[in-house]
Length: 348
Ligand code: SAM
Image (cartoon, rainbow, N blue to C red; front, side, top):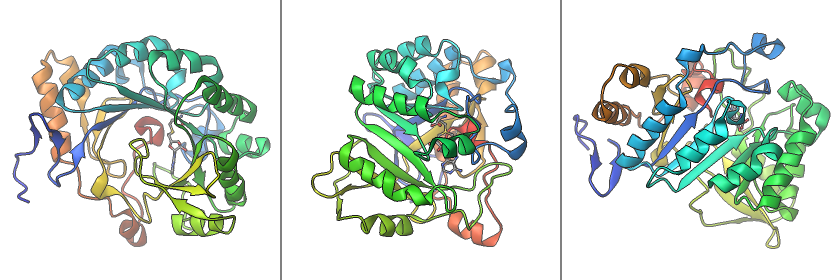
C-alpha cells in the first residue's frame, strides 16, 4: 500500500485508513470528572483528593460534541461509545444523550460506566436508545472495591448491574482489569458468574497508561495466564465473534452457561490490525490510538467559525495518522510506555 495523502473516505463504503482498516467507531469522553478514584486510572496525588479537572472552557460543550458526532456519522461512523471520566456525572447528560441518539444514521450508541449511577439513570438511558452497557467492576469484595476505587461503592455498582439486567440491556458487559496481587484471586469468581448471569465478563489486561501509571510488570497478567487459570474450572468453548464483541475473544464456560467470557489482550495479542476506532478526549483531542499520544485538537476548528468541511478534514487527518500498531510490548521491554495521556480524559 502506498502511504501518500490519499485515504480514506470512499463514498458508499465508509472510512478506511491507510492500512485498509474500516474506521466506524468513535469513543466520546464526555468529561474528565469521575465519582471514583480508581488506582490504575488516576495519579497517586489524585487518589488522595481531587482529580485535576479541566477548566470549563477546555471541555467540549454538548453542542460541540453533537456537531463532531453528526459530522463523523455523515462520514461513516456507525457506532459511538460514551465514556469519561464517568459519563453519567456530567450535568444534563441525559438530554445530551437523547440529542445524540436522534442523529440520523446513528443507531448504535453505547456507554461505559462505573455503574454507580446506573440504578438512577438506567431507565432513561434505555428509553433514549442506549441499551448496551459496559460496567467496570474489578472485585466482588466490597472492601476491595473501596480500596481500588477509593469509594465504598460495591453495593451501588451491583444494584446498577441488576438494574441493567432487569431493564433488558443487552449485552451487559462487566469489565474487570486483572491485576496480580490485587484481584487475581477472584478470576474464578468472575468467570463462574457468567455461568448463571446473562452477562459477558471481560478480562482486560492492565495497560501502562498515564503520567504516573502504577502499572508494573509484576501486576500485569497476560490473557494466556488468565485463560489457563479459568480453563481449570471447566471447558472453555470458543464462540463466533458477535457484532458487539469488539476486540474480545469470546468463550462460554461450559455449554450450559447463561453468559459468556471475553478476553481482551491489548498487550499480549494486540488487535491493532482490526482496530476500527477513533477517540475524542474530553478536551477535544482527536486520538487515533489509545496508546500513542498524538492528538489533533478539535477545539480551534470547532471555535474559530470554520464550517463542517474543516471538521471533516480534521477527522480525515486523524485517520491518516492512525498508526499501524502500538508495539507496546516491545516498547515496554525497551523503555516504558509512550502513552502519557490521562485515562480519565481519554476514556479507555
Ligand atoms: N468511568 C467509566 C468506567 O469506569 O467504566 C468510564 C471510563 S474508564 C477510564 C473506562 C475503562 O477503562 C474502565 O473499564 C477501566 O477499568 C478501564 N481502565 C482504566 N485504566 C486502565 C488501565 N490502566 N488498563 C486497563 N484498563 C483500564
